[in-house]
Image (cartoon, rainbow, N blue to C red; front, top):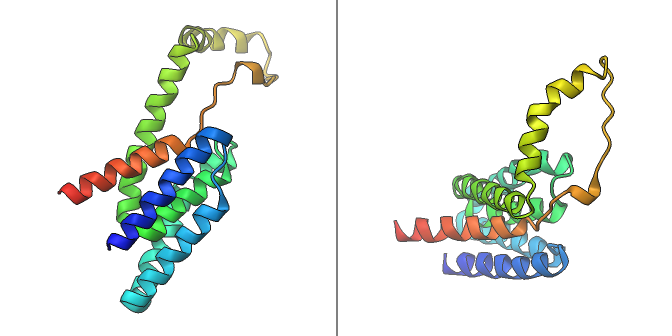
Length: 171
Protein backbone atom coordinates (compact mmCIF):
# COMPACT_ATOMS: atom_id res chain seq x y z
CA UNK A 1 0.00 0.00 0.00
CA UNK A 2 2.99 2.29 0.56
CA UNK A 3 3.69 2.06 -3.18
CA UNK A 4 0.18 3.36 -3.98
CA UNK A 5 0.59 6.25 -1.51
CA UNK A 6 3.93 7.16 -3.11
CA UNK A 7 2.47 7.09 -6.63
CA UNK A 8 -0.50 9.18 -5.49
CA UNK A 9 1.67 11.78 -3.75
CA UNK A 10 4.07 11.99 -6.69
CA UNK A 11 1.22 12.45 -9.19
CA UNK A 12 -0.38 15.08 -6.95
CA UNK A 13 2.87 16.98 -6.46
CA UNK A 14 3.75 17.05 -10.16
CA UNK A 15 0.17 18.04 -11.07
CA UNK A 16 0.19 20.84 -8.50
CA UNK A 17 3.40 22.28 -9.93
CA UNK A 18 2.39 22.02 -13.58
CA UNK A 19 -1.12 23.34 -12.95
CA UNK A 20 0.18 26.39 -11.10
CA UNK A 21 2.94 27.06 -13.66
CA UNK A 22 1.16 26.34 -16.94
CA UNK A 23 -2.49 25.64 -16.07
CA UNK A 24 -2.08 22.06 -17.33
CA UNK A 25 -2.31 18.68 -15.67
CA UNK A 26 -0.30 16.40 -17.89
CA UNK A 27 -1.45 13.10 -19.37
CA UNK A 28 2.09 11.81 -18.81
CA UNK A 29 1.29 12.05 -15.08
CA UNK A 30 -2.37 11.01 -14.91
CA UNK A 31 -2.36 8.05 -17.31
CA UNK A 32 0.52 6.18 -15.62
CA UNK A 33 -1.11 6.82 -12.22
CA UNK A 34 -4.39 5.39 -13.50
CA UNK A 35 -2.64 2.37 -15.03
CA UNK A 36 -0.61 1.85 -11.84
CA UNK A 37 -3.79 1.64 -9.79
CA UNK A 38 -5.49 -0.72 -12.20
CA UNK A 39 -2.44 -3.00 -12.50
CA UNK A 40 -1.55 -2.98 -8.79
CA UNK A 41 -5.04 -3.91 -7.61
CA UNK A 42 -5.49 -6.45 -10.42
CA UNK A 43 -2.27 -8.23 -9.46
CA UNK A 44 -2.79 -8.10 -5.70
CA UNK A 45 -6.54 -8.74 -5.56
CA UNK A 46 -7.48 -10.20 -8.92
CA UNK A 47 -10.80 -9.25 -10.50
CA UNK A 48 -12.04 -7.75 -7.24
CA UNK A 49 -9.06 -5.41 -7.24
CA UNK A 50 -9.59 -4.52 -10.89
CA UNK A 51 -13.22 -3.61 -10.19
CA UNK A 52 -12.22 -1.71 -7.03
CA UNK A 53 -9.80 0.43 -9.04
CA UNK A 54 -12.11 0.78 -12.05
CA UNK A 55 -15.05 1.93 -9.94
CA UNK A 56 -12.78 4.43 -8.20
CA UNK A 57 -11.63 5.71 -11.59
CA UNK A 58 -15.22 6.14 -12.76
CA UNK A 59 -16.29 7.81 -9.50
CA UNK A 60 -13.41 10.27 -9.66
CA UNK A 61 -14.11 11.21 -13.25
CA UNK A 62 -17.87 11.35 -12.73
CA UNK A 63 -17.46 13.74 -9.79
CA UNK A 64 -16.02 16.43 -12.09
CA UNK A 65 -17.75 15.51 -15.35
CA UNK A 66 -20.57 18.07 -15.15
CA UNK A 67 -18.30 21.02 -14.29
CA UNK A 68 -16.05 19.94 -17.17
CA UNK A 69 -18.96 19.72 -19.61
CA UNK A 70 -20.10 23.18 -18.52
CA UNK A 71 -16.62 24.57 -19.21
CA UNK A 72 -15.74 25.18 -15.58
CA UNK A 73 -12.58 23.10 -15.59
CA UNK A 74 -10.20 21.27 -17.85
CA UNK A 75 -9.94 17.62 -18.78
CA UNK A 76 -6.73 17.31 -16.77
CA UNK A 77 -8.66 18.02 -13.58
CA UNK A 78 -11.12 15.25 -14.43
CA UNK A 79 -8.31 12.79 -15.21
CA UNK A 80 -6.49 13.69 -11.99
CA UNK A 81 -9.58 12.86 -9.92
CA UNK A 82 -9.86 9.67 -11.97
CA UNK A 83 -6.27 8.82 -11.06
CA UNK A 84 -7.06 9.40 -7.39
CA UNK A 85 -9.98 7.01 -7.79
CA UNK A 86 -7.95 4.34 -9.59
CA UNK A 87 -5.29 4.47 -6.88
CA UNK A 88 -7.49 4.78 -3.80
CA UNK A 89 -10.96 3.46 -4.64
CA UNK A 90 -14.46 4.88 -4.68
CA UNK A 91 -15.00 5.64 -1.00
CA UNK A 92 -11.74 7.56 -0.57
CA UNK A 93 -12.33 9.44 -3.82
CA UNK A 94 -15.83 10.57 -2.91
CA UNK A 95 -14.64 11.64 0.55
CA UNK A 96 -11.79 13.55 -1.10
CA UNK A 97 -14.22 15.16 -3.51
CA UNK A 98 -16.11 16.71 -0.60
CA UNK A 99 -12.86 18.27 0.64
CA UNK A 100 -11.96 19.32 -2.90
CA UNK A 101 -15.34 20.99 -3.43
CA UNK A 102 -15.19 22.82 -0.10
CA UNK A 103 -11.64 24.05 -0.75
CA UNK A 104 -12.55 25.05 -4.30
CA UNK A 105 -15.50 27.03 -2.98
CA UNK A 106 -13.38 28.75 -0.33
CA UNK A 107 -10.74 29.66 -2.89
CA UNK A 108 -13.40 30.98 -5.26
CA UNK A 109 -15.04 33.15 -2.61
CA UNK A 110 -11.70 34.51 -1.44
CA UNK A 111 -10.70 35.36 -5.03
CA UNK A 112 -14.01 37.13 -5.60
CA UNK A 113 -13.55 39.15 -2.43
CA UNK A 114 -9.91 39.87 -3.29
CA UNK A 115 -10.83 41.15 -6.74
CA UNK A 116 -13.63 43.27 -5.22
CA UNK A 117 -16.22 41.31 -7.11
CA UNK A 118 -18.37 40.51 -4.10
CA UNK A 119 -20.15 43.86 -4.06
CA UNK A 120 -20.71 43.64 -7.81
CA UNK A 121 -22.06 40.07 -7.48
CA UNK A 122 -24.47 41.00 -4.68
CA UNK A 123 -25.59 44.10 -6.57
CA UNK A 124 -26.20 42.04 -9.73
CA UNK A 125 -28.17 39.46 -7.76
CA UNK A 126 -30.56 42.12 -6.42
CA UNK A 127 -30.82 44.00 -9.72
CA UNK A 128 -31.41 40.89 -11.86
CA UNK A 129 -35.22 40.70 -11.38
CA UNK A 130 -35.61 44.38 -12.26
CA UNK A 131 -33.39 43.99 -15.32
CA UNK A 132 -35.30 40.92 -16.52
CA UNK A 133 -38.61 42.79 -16.28
CA UNK A 134 -37.33 45.24 -18.91
CA UNK A 135 -36.35 42.52 -21.41
CA UNK A 136 -39.94 41.43 -22.19
CA UNK A 137 -38.94 37.76 -22.13
CA UNK A 138 -35.76 38.12 -24.18
CA UNK A 139 -32.50 37.39 -22.45
CA UNK A 140 -29.26 38.46 -24.07
CA UNK A 141 -26.26 36.88 -22.49
CA UNK A 142 -23.06 38.72 -23.23
CA UNK A 143 -19.89 37.05 -22.00
CA UNK A 144 -17.55 39.33 -20.11
CA UNK A 145 -14.26 37.50 -20.22
CA UNK A 146 -12.33 40.43 -18.78
CA UNK A 147 -14.35 40.22 -15.56
CA UNK A 148 -14.09 36.46 -15.06
CA UNK A 149 -11.92 35.11 -12.26
CA UNK A 150 -10.20 31.79 -12.82
CA UNK A 151 -7.73 29.68 -10.88
CA UNK A 152 -6.06 26.30 -11.42
CA UNK A 153 -8.50 23.79 -9.94
CA UNK A 154 -5.68 21.29 -9.52
CA UNK A 155 -4.79 23.18 -6.34
CA UNK A 156 -7.97 22.23 -4.42
CA UNK A 157 -7.84 18.73 -5.93
CA UNK A 158 -4.34 18.20 -4.57
CA UNK A 159 -4.94 19.86 -1.20
CA UNK A 160 -8.31 18.16 -0.65
CA UNK A 161 -6.92 14.75 -1.56
CA UNK A 162 -3.85 15.18 0.63
CA UNK A 163 -6.04 16.33 3.51
CA UNK A 164 -8.20 13.22 3.13
CA UNK A 165 -5.11 11.00 2.84
CA UNK A 166 -3.59 12.36 6.04
CA UNK A 167 -6.97 12.14 7.78
CA UNK A 168 -7.52 8.50 6.71
CA UNK A 169 -4.00 7.41 7.66
CA UNK A 170 -4.25 9.15 11.04
CA UNK A 171 -7.57 7.48 11.88
